[in-house]
Image (cartoon, rainbow, N blue to C red; front, top):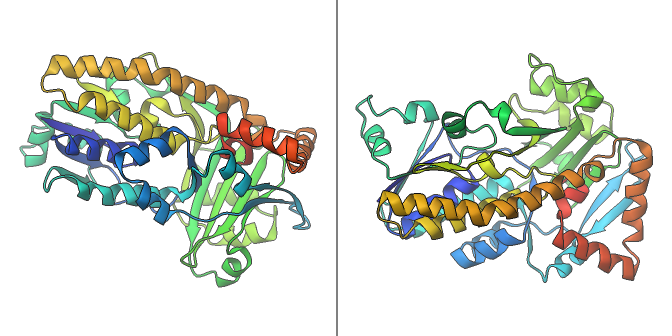
Length: 397
């Protein structure tokens, strides 16, 4: 059996590995020229943590993870700490089943894990746009394999080309939540790294929030989020570095130093969820953010990508004909859709906590974070985080 996986992100690589272990021949095509270098720090827990343990990649993820003692909120004018969140308490509420990972590192772990599959069973092709890969009339070996695939998995993200080919323009399905987020990593800034090594710091600000943290290899990472409506929308002709400097310039001096080094093409996208009535048609199915984007407000996007990939491949892996594949895809959607919808609802509820729209709600969040240090309230807050939106939905990291 042959599968074509469109997209070499978290969901795509997880699907490819598991199908290959189930005896499939898998081609993964990715429009980018290589693994993504930019991304933000993520909290990895919940369903994805359990799935990673079952499929055998958890030891690699532990090795790639970061130790974060706390997240600090600071006043952007003075740099004074206004509140903090104790990660050890959050981890304790989860029974220690929490990892902090850079998104590019998670992708590299999954890429490395393809080596667990039989030799030659997975081939990853970078620099292949989807529309080029779907045409077999070019007469290439890759084109012939893709055209002959028994299963096509569209794991090509929020702006999925596979979804567009199946169901139409993304404006029908992508639901922006009024925010944008950007992230990038810089090198050669030893002064910033010395100041933020071992620290994860977020500005305690209205309508926009900037985060900065030092990585283990001497680099420094930036995370930037803001409300589009507070900035009078986004000019499509304005490049990302210019826009980020306009929105965040003057917010806080360390962020100004980061903005000076912003690369030409940072990760920069709308914060959105994907909602559509069907996830598959025939033997083509969507996975990951292409159908189940919960947004970073929900705090479990990467976790959901791996857990969803495990369920999909568990169901379709044993299939050996078109009828059983289509039945398995229907069962995948029946089981997984309610889980996705629950996380999406949690993400929408978290919007005003993630990025307060006014000073009143900012002060309310600050009070709640300070109160969480009290023993009884701390236990309640941590249980709520563990069972609901997740720490990322609460802090903006």
